[in-house]
Image (cartoon, rainbow, N blue to C red; front, side):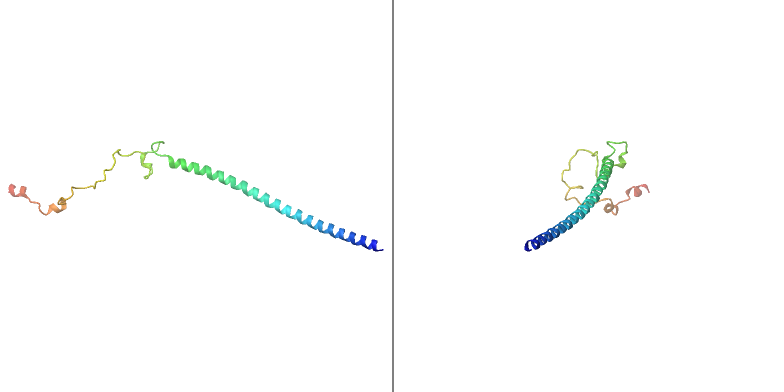
Length: 127
């Protein structure tokens, strides 16, 4: 009779193992379904982002071509050129590094300072 009890115990263990295996298999299928759903959602997001990136690249190229237009390579008048991007220089002369203005050591008189010393000699001779 001991052999029958052993067989029942072994059969019981086998059933428990199969039940756990079925539970693990059910959990695996659930996780697999969830992962597939996540992958599907991410694939849709990637497609949308790829389309958006393409649109942004096209807009970027269009805006760059507009910025690169000037009077030298389009039919626009020179007044529409951007101030920071002068295409034509006034002349090719380089700056000498010297200061602008009169000679150093000069009296520095200008029109306003000479106005007070003005003599009306032409009026005196006419009278």
